[in-house]
Length: 289
Image (tube, rainbow, N blue to C red; front, side, top):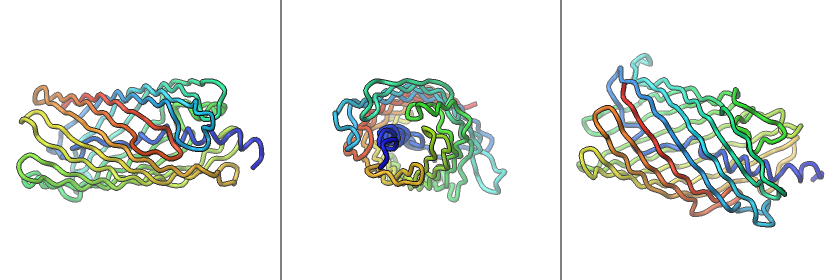
């Protein structure tokens, strides 16, 4: 592999690892609301990692710190001849990292790529607590992007499509079980360190088991497994860029009143290959308009 690609490899791998949280769901995301309901959701996700698991980090000094804030606006509507939720997401991202193999830290902050899309429900049966739908979110390359520091840039300079099929089923009076099959598809970045970057799809399974502790409070266990995302730069496949990781965590959600909910989530990588070994903290606030 040419020297230039060898130098680019650590940053490419870091991009693949750091961006993996973009489509994380929360328990009960697919529980429906009546047509006409409008939700505003504020997210405060924090990511920390003091190690990178992969051959790119030969000296073991890679680390990662991501602070972000995001706003999601969605509507429950019948304009799709079925229940659907048109929505958009905007974010501000502050990333500091010592990329695998890098001599020093790099940092960028700014507006991330916005996402637009929605969920189309195939099953919407609140009486039996059964739901199923397809969530599609299109990432639009309008965020701040720095070709000289792509591994920490808020924007990715490429289109991205996240597809997620969900099935949610109530069990007994208090349990909800959920399975999500997800594919993250990526367009071409034609200005990655002066070359063209392509990435194969990343496939993920997200599963939740949540339990009503009280009428207004629930707890949830979560499990995420990911596989894929191999990278190609300037037409050459990059060895050791195929990611595999497994994350486990929990969430605690509480309705303050009929219109406001707060959620705390903690997630940790329990197995990681060619990605940062992350700890993730999420604070979320939901308001029903």
